[in-house]
Structures are given as C-alpha cells and as structure tokens.
Length: 95
Image 1 (cartoon, rainbow, N blue to C red):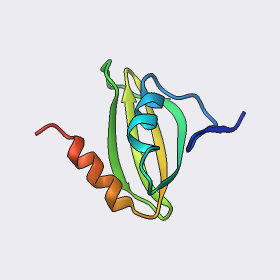
Image 2: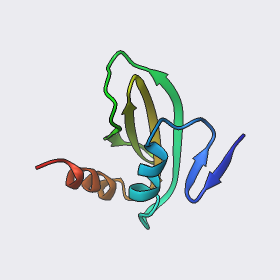
Image 3: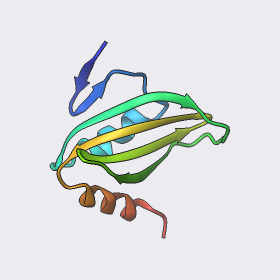
Image 4: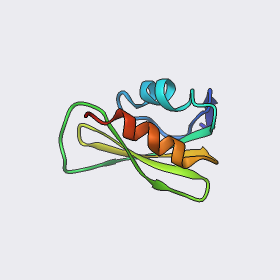
C-alpha cells in the first residue's frame, strides 16, 4: 500500500527510529517537498542506534542512507536545494 504521512511516502516498511527522525528533522524543512524511503536491506554491520548519513545529490534532490542494527535503507529526499539539506547534516555531526 502506498500512502503519505505529511511529506513522507509509505511504500515500504521503515527501519526502527527512521520515521521519527524523518518527521522531526527532514519533512519539517520548507524546501523539502517529499521523502521516499526505499526497501530495507540486510547489511553485515551491526549497531543498535539509528545512523542517518547524507550520501549525495541526485537530479531530484538528495540520497540518504539509514542504518539500524543489521538493517540498511536508502531514503530519497525531493528538494530543489540539496545543498541546504547537506548543510543540515553537516551541522548534526558531532564536533
């Protein structure tokens, strides 16, 4: 089933903690018009806490990678200003 909650499209399941992160930090940005989480895949890495990284700009916006436990999920963010989104992630990094 495909549906949207705010700017977040729900076509696939979302890894633990990612929905809350997207609602708090990404979908509230005025220059973000949509958020599309991809399929969940299994990675060999481990770790309990959610980690979301900015990967690169795309033609329609930006690509993020979210990891939690052994799950990994791509997240596509629709925006005409991907450089602003990248700056948000730079500011979230620990100093």
